[in-house]
Length: 295
Image (cartoon, rainbow, N blue to C red):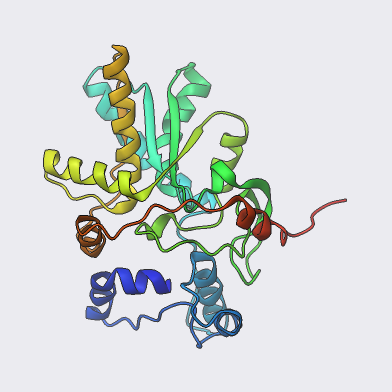
């Protein structure tokens, strides 16, 4: 478990331990990849890229263990499209169709699961729906990354993937949206963004939590911080419609509840959250280590 999430989301850790799991903060001393990172930075907060490296190394060293990536690879995105297919059926029942489809993006599966069936309608039926992937300013893979071949993990153990990336050595700020703190974006989402089929925006965590609290007080559901990014952008779209007098059908993905993220809400209500924008110079520094592919 990424070290910063291990500390921020202690109830999630406790739930896994309840069912017998051993939960180790990454980077750890259990793997060569983890020890290598800790030698460079003993206080490393970890990243999804580092945790993937450790998980792959651990699985590769055991005969009874297999590793399955859960977000970025194409088959995961396509499996999750059941979400968008169900949404299309729901819109048919309402005799309506979305003008805007919004989802938070970290690796891409959550957003793709909702958006891709509607993207198909755009290609096949000529629908004019706008698609918006929402990421944190602290992890701006689409809005500040480059489209290039890169590794999916820090220790360069995974295959190369052409994607929008901040560099496999990227270490994100410890914002309260662990599922979005990844250095790259799925190849399918990246290709659609490169072709201008989907848009991307970045938002800060304080306005994200403002939107999440507003949603909870209206709908009775406390959203996960990741989902709050989509809510923030959906609210901004709705407010723009109010100001311009437009009428739009806006759909967003509420990808999870925040019952294990109440520490983040505590920090928000106490005024301890800070907005963080990843500096352009650090992006360039991380991209300097991209693998050289082709001539």
